[in-house]
Image 1 (cartoon, rainbow, N blue to C red):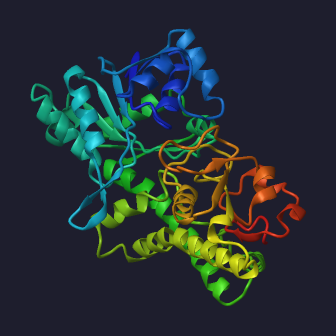
Image 2 (image 1 turned 90 degrees about the horizontal axis):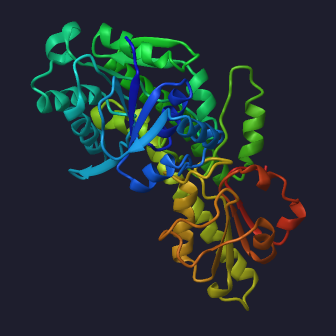
Image 3 (image 1 turned 180 degrees about the horizontal axis):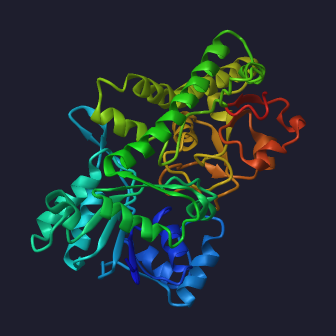
Length: 426
């Protein structure tokens, strides 16, 4: 199967790098996004997100005429859907998967579908989402046939292939990582494999659409459960007056033990989200997965409680001071080290709550951004690490960015320190 024109629906942290990498293989790529600013930026050969190497690839692809962005879908040989799958509240449950973006993308491409086209859902999705895409397309295009009704002989091929890349390393991992490809039929899987082999150097393993959907959820749930163990251990050790960082180092000397490092919670668009997709489909069976999510979701409040405790200690030691005179410095806003991505970030959520309850000054140190996110941290000030440490009474380490690891311990003397990552207190 030949792919002369490939359309990528959704030009965010996954869609744009994917579109750019395919275009770098001298394929015609049409990117589609509802965000006019993103479209205009890309068409100028620039990027609206931060990801190493992406700017150069996009600039070259646009300049050479291989990549173009638009707000309306156009005919293509293959369509890759890479749109968000957030939560919605329903029946008292705040973690119900919201498929509205996927359904909207499916409806948008339906009018331009032609016989022989391939549609791939890349968005991380609950089990059954790929089948839902097929249903939406079939409802919109009764003149075409689809796998759920015509099997191998369908006019349109449909598959699921979840992304599994690490922010900050997306370009490399898009090319090098293995891909799990789940077609609704074997011919769907083969067609999708042919597309990914345009740029993927890793192995393409085929399976069913449902298994491919569950594979991504399983990978991130596994990681979430292991992080929850470390986070719960840190809470236990705090209560028992044990240094959790030392404990983990000692325990990991066992040849079959590899405990992860605790933190302020779990963030990002995958690990903090995907386990709930399993829980939503099997609420009675996913007991361990749910418990891990609850542990990790509860860790930010534990950090906030430790900050409040530190403020209380500071005021007790300085009775001449009032709460309005307490300066709190929060180090890090991103959901993981050395990136600018604030999505689902526990550090951002913690900082927001600290700022909302702190009548004094709240300083923020985040070396990967140039301005604070609009409307989220009113009254806070973005400062350098040196400036924060000069004036802060309470210092909260939330993200272990590389620059923070090189801070002189003497600069921390005299501060009430909450180190959620163990780079200063270990």
